[in-house]
Image 1 (cartoon, helix red, strand yellow):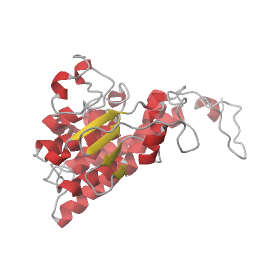
Image 2 (cartoon, helix red, strand yellow):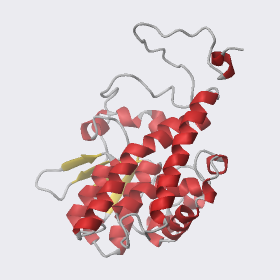
Image 3 (cartoon, helix red, strand yellow):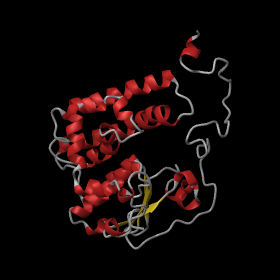
Length: 294
């Protein structure tokens, strides 16, 4: 048996000299993936009553921002009140003209701050976290060493998570076939990342040291949920994520924060109906507008 056959690659596949797009080539996201940017249709985005308008979905990148906003509100920053509008990516909302105007990369989350002299668009989840931390002077340590450490881990997450999501998650859960080489390659890398976090958290309460920060908010929705076996089906079990005991301690502690519990509900469209708040326009929505109540 050839190596190609052993790794589940089509035996007759030859790399072309120039790649061409074959639309609808399989996989969960085949219907929305494309090799070009820009809008595909006209669609004006709604604007609510609050200065901060978030357009998102309850994926790990979206949850980072809703956790941050709920944490800010828990600290008493009333200027952090926000409207969270649901972007249905499988219905191509991210390719509407209004959304593309905010994020030309057509990825959630995207935010507009209407409290500035001219509305300010902010896209990329890490950029939104940093923007909010600076705007409200919160969740970013002031000490030079801790501040730098928080940014180290924030940018670590931005670079590392694509290997977990677009790499491992795709080939483990979403690809039309399981390719052994691809699963092994990305499983190895994700386990290396889990080990990086576990070793760091063995000597640090939070990622930046003793202070909870935007670094924790960025990393937890990806790696904290993996340890809880809540990502990509049974991926946590597959990767033996629970064995990373320091990471498990950190994940469990952050999960118990009330603002985290609220933040992970916003724009969520999967799981228990009582934990899905498709849109959030007021703090009372958590009590009256979850999917089990409407």
